[in-house]
Length: 450
Image (tube, rainbow, N blue to C red; front, side, top):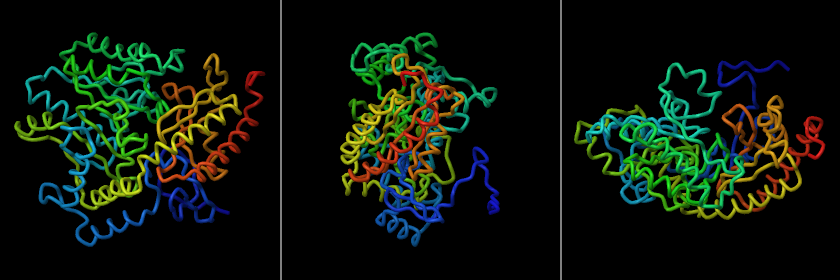
């Protein structure tokens, strides 16, 4: 059969089946094959596919107005979503700026931080410190604070590199993540870097409270987040939390930062915030940052679709469904159950060297040897091959290279927050089959003990 023509291009030449429909945690192609959405797309579809209440809210808004430019009108939908978002975020973080995705939210946060510095007589502050490895988006500004070589290296000449500190990968460094000394060890690297750069020049520290694609659901060591907050306060550095992947309940709290009682200066949200029903994201900032900027003439930044009423109506309906269905608690409960299942698979398959995460943001990492933490040979492209095997079995999962994008392999297993215990069994069974096939393929390359 001749392959159907396509005029699209994305990251490569590979083709996929045509999507026909999606309901709950399941998706079907036009040949009728069923897939379990075991990664919620790219950790997006938090409430599952085809939620009728969200679709009804979208239809209602479409019949009223699909677009109203923010400089021409206020809209009930955007005001309602902003108010609900402010209710769900820490006290004082009650100014919301809407965008269409995570990269836009990150850009917005950096630009607000810089304009606040200018408005308050701190023009010398411009450096944004982030971690290595990390991923914060694909625009040039977001890439400047990203540390993931395959995505950043081609564009290095076009960007102003920003300072980095090591991500707290205690498990790779042979340190105990439950020991508070470990958390302080990594957090104090931030203080050292601030001093090295000159505290008066450092604007912000950008961090995912639980790691996303670049570190594979990395949970910080005990004491890390609290010490980071102290350091930022001491040096007048803004703490900006990238909750694009972790927000909207995925880790078993509405915000992952709630696990440590941390109140940041700015939060960025997207992905599960509108759960894939529309492109939507938000920057949520403390009032004390926004008011000086508005007093100086306004926020010199914006996007055409900021505050789009259709997107905001969908986002508000998603938040209502998260609350109505108790999905934050379900993410916590089902996350514990899924993590236990992944640990059981780890017992059976020696190539799984680590299982980690919170709630339904979970990952396992492949290793050739658990004791040395040696990764699988890079030429195997395990992160890519395993995902394809799982896909062939009808399970969608998400993967990246763990160690800066050039080495190591992890697989994210992050089903929608509506997932049930029985559906976890389905996911585990398909993972088991995929692991068995993958193990058979790579066995000749492994040490004899594996």
